[in-house]
Length: 399
Ligand SMILES: [Zn+2]
Ligand SMILES: [Zn+2]
Image (cartoon, rainbow, N blue to C red; front, side, top):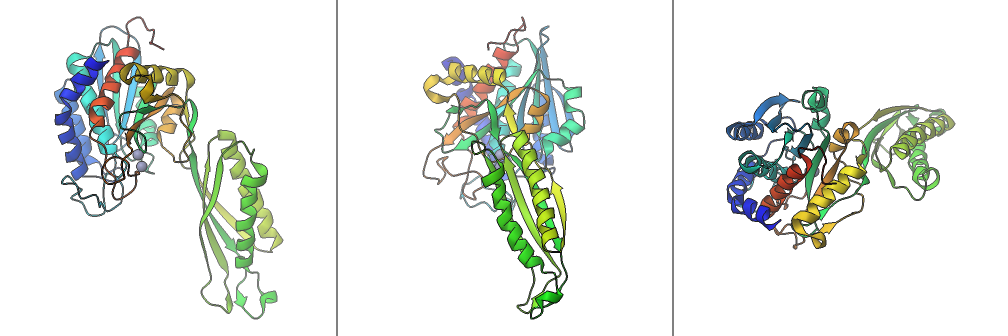
């Protein structure tokens, strides 16, 4: 597929400049007004039917060609992170404390580059929906767009997304079918005891001793309740109680982060945390209040769509540059919610393996990170080829 790689590389300069412009003006979750307007204006200029303001700042651009009945969704995220940039690039963020540290500027630019090529030269037959979502970084922008009727208004037979991955060679693709990224849930435990004098513990109900016991007991969930062949994390990231050595406080609070790579494991952890905390609290004569907050779901790539996405990657860059089944990740991603509704796959593109000083190897969410502009050409070529292979007139995808 060198002609596509060459064609998209030839016009990459325009989209590298665009990527750097977005990078210079990062916007936090649900505040992506400038970015969303830029995306929507570009798409309109290229002939897309554009819907703005879905899920606050989300944008959908639709292009219909021919009589084909198949419908494809491609998703990019647009939000930045509350991190102060320290990579020294001339296109560094002009907003102190806000930066594109996850490469969503690059994801947006790659999809826009593909959008322009598809509008001008796309050999496809069917309906293409380009979904630019807000608030991937913890805000649940995907869910908000879905709550506002994303897939009812723009039905898709399959949906795909791409994320850059530092530590993987630039322009290489990594795919995985099945569970690929973890669910992420949060809980606040508040232990209510009876405060008192540190010298007379028998006249108090000490929430600190109870908290210490609960922290240790929680470790047994992964060790004793979860199948050893499954992955799970229960982390107590904060424990607050008391202020003085001779005062038993009346309460203690614990903050938990819980991750799993399987929906049943996720449910089991929640059940075990609640049961264990309640029983432990009772044994210490205190009460426990649990505020359980579900976060992102387990991201599960469907088999047929992942096989298709693999075939497209191999056709584009050759088998040597495609990892057919990468390892699962314990990070989370709200594209998981879209995959609960529509089959599809989440594809990783290598950002580079440099020393972490701008060569693409620096991990995302690091102040020194930057998206690798060399991926604008190959990443957009991937979207173009995937669209042309999926939206075919006879309804038979290449997979
Ligand atoms: Zn991120
Ligand atoms: Zn990200």
